[in-house]
Length: 369
Image 1: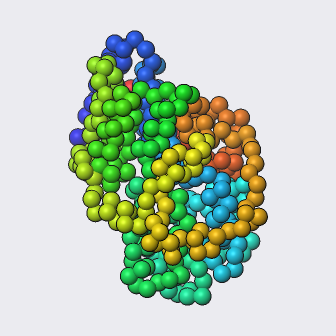
Image 2: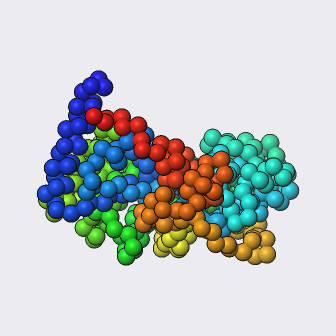
Image 3: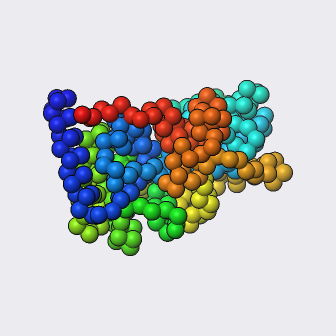
């Protein structure tokens, strides 16, 4: 399909969405749960293509963004110990904690190393046997299997100085929390593609049935997203609520059983804190008792006095992540808070809602008229 054909198909899809939405006689609000979808939607200018009564809002799909301050404070506190090496993905460096960031700690002499896979941490641990190497395990169901596999590999290789500081999150429980929140109004979900590769589509069925809110799994190309929106609007117009799969070439109903098994071997579900949402029941992963020797919080617990007291700012990242407000409703957006000087994590991560709004503005109108 060439560009002209893509454009024509996109315009037909928008026309179908517009016609179906009009039959509902009300405004429709759909949430994308994945940060990569947020960026893709902005890059293509999809929001601007849709009719006025179809609104897209971004949800808590950016792992960096939903990580609360206290986790960052713990990471910074561990980094300041001379016997500790922190390994992390690069997008965690500038995430603000209560008083500082990992980037500031690194500037002040902390040994913080960027890795491209948790497995890289094993070699760092082998090269530094007198140090405690701590990987910052932040992410969703997509990255949890790799973190778990790293623990299993370290155990097999007899590496005893590698640890995890875990803040893995689970998507279905937070979707339920959103639907139970009186401030949140969502008519359907654009379900995450990468997460669903691991979890499968069946995991969303109870949510869709219990709350009668449709969901469509889709990929990240503009046409895939538009097709997902068409399916969502069609379901609402017909009074239906079911899980559909617009990403069938890579997402199966059962997901990836091998990845699920690896994660379940090392981790178990636990009540977990989300930025702007507080504690969400069974929405995160903690290391099982059998793997406590790899859990830095079990091996080297931090005294309460080492963590700074919580503070309040004017940042509205938590409300943005729940789809209650847009970045433009935040008094800091584009002023005190910009990518080069981020106040909140939604502006730090490349998948952050505020960063996408700031970078792409009105979008490129990839399939505009």
